[in-house]
Length: 143
Image 1 (cartoon, rainbow, N blue to C red):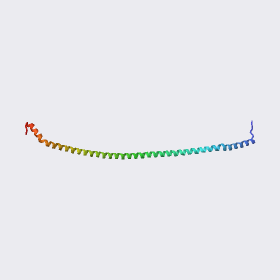
Image 2 (image 1 turned 90 degrees about the vertical axis):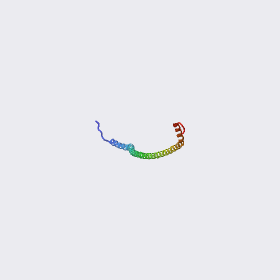
Image 3 (image 1 turned 180 degrees about the horizontal axis):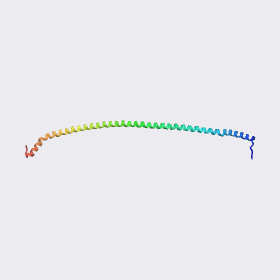
Image 4 (image 1 turned 90 degrees about the horizontal axis):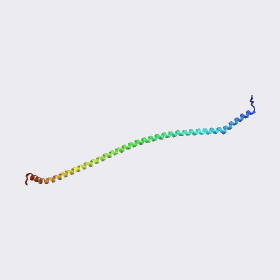
């Protein structure tokens, strides 16, 4: 059986262990913790950036929707204004066409009346001749 007797080597080993922990802390643990803290801050910054970008995206999306809604309303108003102007223009053109048609109809009626009057005068001038011709044919002799 082996008995362990504490002697000076145990104290040296304890001191060696404490020095090793101190050196490892200075050389290895602190830089690693610093890097981990930097990464943590960077990740938090990125998360904050992502959240702000998401909020900006939501705001811009809403702005686009509002802009589209306004554009549709404005377009509808302009369409209605154009339709109203077109109806007014159509009505004016139809009225002009109807007025022209009335004038042409009146002119044609006047022309027909003038032609009828000319034909009547022409026929009245020849009525005596026609009467003589008819009576000659009916009677078979000159009157």
